[in-house]
Length: 65
Image (tube, rainbow, N blue to C red; front, top):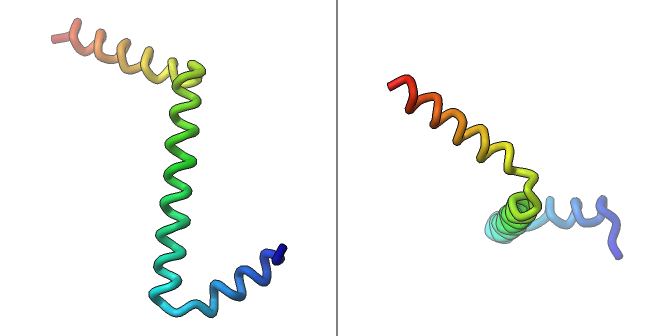
C-alpha cells in the first residue's frame, strides 16, 4: 500500500480536472461520514440535549409574548 507521501505526490501531479474530481470525491465522502455520524448520534440520544434546549427556548419565547 502506498505511503501518504507517495499519495500526496501523486495528487500534486494531477491535472486540474482530475484534481477537481478527486476533491469532489473527498467532499462527498466527508459529507456522507458526517451524515452517518449525525444519524448515529441522534438515534443513540447523544443529541437529545439540543432538542431539549430548542424546546425550552421555544417555551420561554412563547411565555414572554
